[in-house]
Image (cartoon, rainbow, N blue to C red):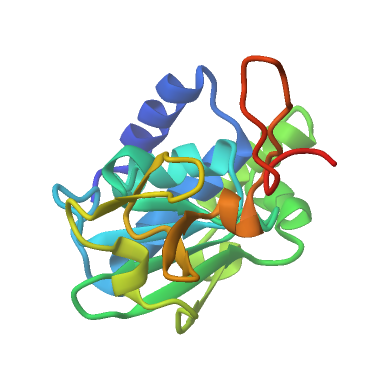
Length: 205
C-alpha cells in the first residue's frame, strides 16, 4: 500500500482539490486492503468495490484501490451514504466499511490547529486511528458475484428498441430479450417527436 500522503496527492490531482470526504475514501480503501490482505492499489481486477454514493469519497476510494468504473471493478449503488463494500472476488469475502458516528466532532481533538471545522476534519481524518474513524463488518451480497461481473463478450439485442445490451443486463419476457428500460425499469422516458418512433413502454402517456 502506498503512503497516505501519496494517495491523497493523487486524489487531489483528480479532484482539483483535497476535501475531508476524499480522505475518508482513501482511508476506507486502505483499511479494506489491510483487512482483506490484498496489495493495494491493485494491478489487476481481484478487488471489486461497491460504493453507496458518488462524489468526493469515490475519488479517494479509487485512488487507494485502483477500482474504476471503466475497469468494471467499481459499481455505484447510490444510497446516499459514505459507505462501500469491498469484495475479494477470489475468496468471496466482502467487507462493508463506513465512517463511525460522531467523527466530525472527534476530528477536532486530532487537529486542534485547524482554523475551522472543515480544516479540522481534513487533518483529523488523516490522523485518527482506524478503529476510531471507521467501522467494518463482513457482509453477504444479495446478488451473486457471477451476476455482477457477468462474462466477457456476452451481449444481446433488445427485441423492442433494438439497442445492444452488454453484461447480461437484460430480461427475457415472453421469450424475447428486453433491455431494462423496455422491461419497465428505466430511469428515463422517451420524449416523442416527429423524428423518433413511438415506443409505448418508454414514452409519456
